[in-house]
Length: 136
Image 1 (cartoon, rainbow, N blue to C red):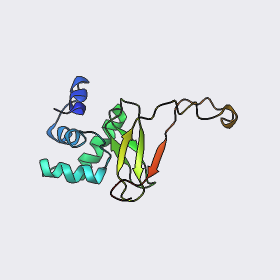
Image 2: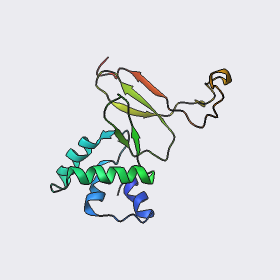
Image 3: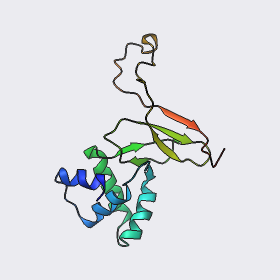
């Protein structure tokens, strides 16, 4: 059973076959799928699952805080089940591969007080970009 499925069951979320399949598709390390990719993989496991069901389930998972929406290319939203562990993303500028990374240090501390313009900064999102070994 996936970590996401376990977390959802622990919350008492009603686990229909469609919801379970979406959660199973999102299971794993470095998972950053678009809704269409989730749908394509879900159909392999449950051929009758509709695109609308996948989109609605992803929306529910985001609302629950169990999955986060990530935009790395300014286009398609990607869904990241690693919602409970602080991390940043490393994105290949060639093929678009996304990896979770855990840099040391506090990204909030990297922003000097003079660059905060009076804001009380509560979080930071850092995206590292480069070329993966296959694209380099």
